Length: 618
Ligand SMILES: Cc1cc2nc3c(=O)[nH]c(=O)nc-3n(C[C@H](O)[C@H](O)[C@H](O)COP(=O)(O)OP(=O)(O)OC[C@H]3O[C@@H](n4cnc5c(N)ncnc54)[C@H](O)[C@@H]3O)c2cc1C
Image 1 (cartoon, rainbow, N blue to C red):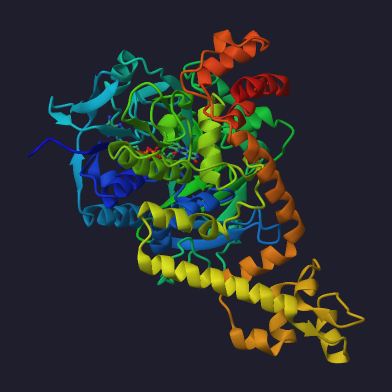
Image 2: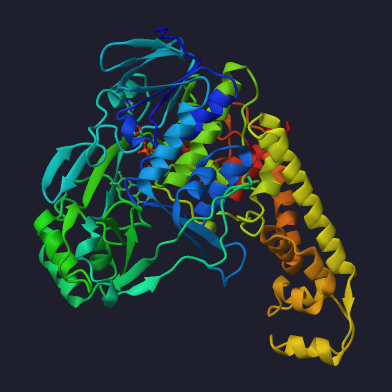
């Protein structure tokens, strides 16, 4: 076999699959190496895609031409819109996945993509010459040449798993760790650090008494991730809810001395927003109970996932803890809960393109950058895949701004904020969250996906038609007036509303109790048009929140001024007077590319930005 490729992607997890597909679809020859080809796009934790903020990432991936949304739509066993009664900025789709089907579906896409060469092997070394990637070496000593490498190694680098005080080498249950690559990175001057994450036990559903739990069904009206057509309607399966109690908490408290975290065996910091159950009991000691969701892992398996019960306590304690939960008194554990500690590469060493600041052609994406979550990984993989191709073709890097997307926000946070704990996307991380909604990801990004070459003509035409329909519908709602008569007020009274004079539909829609759906009762033309939900949802949001949206657009314009001040890569901060030494140190470490990015670095003060602005102006 010829061992020459354009791009080598290390890892076929969520980041690696998107990266390989983007690079290959843009014409590169891609070698995709992974530790186990039967674990492609594995969901080693929660078998679900989406949820708050993450659903927006999935829609953005889709709008740019990635595949995560398509795979989640094709393999769901439950679809649910969370926060549906709250504002549009926090509404979020969540797909419970059939874990095996998800992995197989992704593998099929990879195998049916020209230019992707899949290989089960462990990459142990990168090869660098004159600060530029020239290849990689695997565990068998085979050398590969390439000009770009995308590292998406997840939790595997020097991975060590813990069940109680017992440690096992491994990146995730049933998979060996990746040894060698971290050392090779360090030899080339890349700094690595440790993080930790954990997952709950998997239980045999035949040993669960669901009658003692609350049922959590999926939605009756389905929504999907992908903006592509022909989304499959599949049977849905419920999840269940149970709760911890005083007995659970006292078992955990009595066994904290057997926790590797509390005994100092694990040094890496764990995810703040997905804490282990022992962390929750200790940190929120006054809370008498915590929600535990019981989620199926697939259609053809008895394995269920115990969400909210992640732990690194010993296996025998896990049985006791689980059996204290209502409905799980006879629980049989198929796989134990465990924690894993792994190497990551703090992303302040990379640029917004996700390429290393010091080694040309070396890209990082996913958990290796300090994030946690499939969606965060997929989003970065897509951007790294596109930028590896741009780098090879000597094109400008593809960078997304914070104002354009959650993907842009995520990457900017990673490369700017010197993350010290697993980073998860949250709606609160965006200052523009009313602009960056899951419903309008396509209107924000499809044009870009098309220009890059990952969105085909037919998808682009569908997008143009959809935008035009939304525009026309908003116009119609602004023009159509309904009269204040008994019939209309009879309908409106059902929703706690009344009108004294004729009112345009757009004006009426701004009232909190009025939803677009109600117009089907009030207005014949709305019934005739019978527009699809994704169109009416977006039209409704654009009218209802018009004032807020305009205000955020103004904010974007103001902050855009700082984005225009580019900072030269070779700037010598030691020569700049009138900035504090703390600021100088941070600027030297992060080397921001614009004044706007500099202003977001923790500890950099507005006065420092003014000094920099004057200097750059000169
Ligand atoms: C125990 C555990 C608990 C987790 N808990 C959570 C959680 O609570 N919340 C959450 O959001 N996410 C959680 N996750 C994280 C989630 O699984 C990851 O964020 C996501 O899968 C990261 O995607 P990735 O593509 O970066 O890496 P992964 O999906 O892990 O894929 C990495 C791939 O790289 C391959 N690989 C690694 N090194 C090499 C090498 N040297 N050569 C060849 N191949 C290599 C591996 O085989 C693997 O296929 C958890 C993961 C684990 C393992």
